[in-house]
Every structure is written in structure tokens, then in C-alpha cells.
Amino acid sequence: MANSKRDLFLKRRLRVRNKLRKVNAGRVRLSVHRSNKNISVQLIDDVKGVTLASASSLEKGLGIVGKNNVEAAAKVGTAIAERAKKAGVQEAYFDRGGFLYHGKVKALADAARDAGLKL
Image (cartoon, one colour):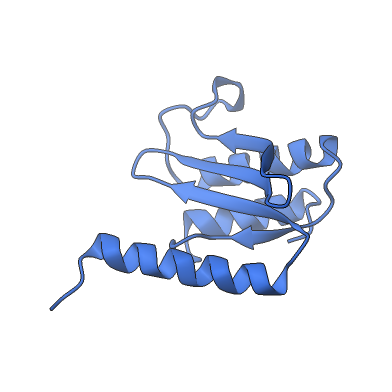
């Protein structure tokens, strides 16, 4: 029987996340969520179970409300890198979830790296 797109997405997300957990124990996780209208990212400390910083295309301060394109993702990536520095985080591992590393997800990661966050 064929799996639905949602089931395949959830399997891919768990596979990616579990592999990353084994390799990057003790580091902060940069988790990305992309929808059809927005993109958001969080810095999560899994040991303590807290979110250290977050950024989203819904924030009015970034000036990209209502836009969901590669440029908006790049601004969100730059914003999360700046907030990570304020939170005292220099390096994190990139958790793309079930999303392919292409387009907006790739633009967000590249912008975060360019702004000084080590992924």
C-alpha cells in the first residue's frame, strides 16, 4: 500500500533527526520549519529542553511579512545567527527536519553561516 506524502515526510524527519542526534550529542540544534506561507527557525538545547532563540518570517521587524521566498529565508537566517551570538551560541547542528536541503532551506542555512554561525 502506498504511503501518503505526510507519512513519508514524518518518516524522513525522524530519520534525519535521529541520525543527527547520534553524531552531534551535546550541541545546540538549529531546527527549521517551512510552510507554504512562512519559514521559521529555532535554536533548541535538547539537554535542557529549552528554546534559546528563534526567528520567523512573521516578525514585523525583519520587514518580510507576507513574503515566502529565498530572500526572506536569507533574512531569517541572518537574524537567527545574530540572536545566537547574543545567546552565547557559536556552533549548532542544522536540523532540516523532513525538508529537502534546497531552495529556501539552503538559503537560510547559507545566510546563517555567512553571518557567523558555525553549522
